[in-house]
Amino acid sequence: MKYILSLLSVLALTACTAAPTKAPYAGENEGLVIFGAEIEVRGDAELEYDFMLTVEHLDSGEQYRRRMQVEESKTYAVMGRLAPGEYRFVKREDIRRDGRGIRLFDIDGEFSVEAGYVTLPKRVMVEKKLFTRKAEITDLDSDAAEVLFLTDILTDDTYEGWSLLRPAE
Image (cartoon, rainbow, N blue to C red; front, side):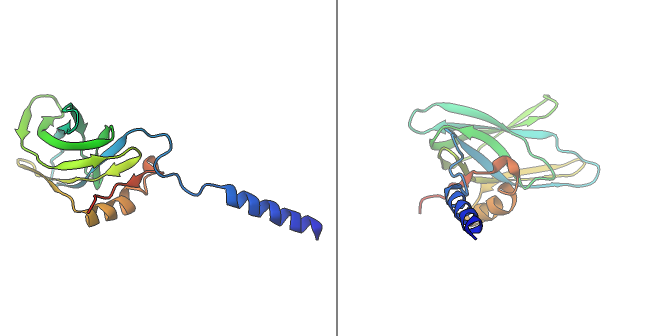
């Protein structure tokens, strides 16, 4: 009986000291910016463009370029890591994957980045057919961002421990 009580005491103490989650992501000094994605490829077509996004840190005025690839099978596209702060989108370049062309487009909006958190400011939609391509980047509301984060991003082991940065209301 003494043995069983000792064993239960040890188990109770170890259960209390275990950390159930790590949020924000342990040791992370940057945040991660991800877009929601709706990619549809019809017929014998394939995706031929990636997106190069330029953002500006509002406090320093420094600009950063991040290449974002889209994939047909994914519901999100990773823009990349940024230092904590407030940012605004400056421009969007659609760059052919074979390096033979660039198209410039406007993109607007501001977003926040915090270390160890995922920011989901936009949604990219691409519809590709054999001879046509339609691509749009639109705002992603906070409810849709939360659903995407919980159902698709957080279930990927790559993002274990990250938390969603919810916009201030």
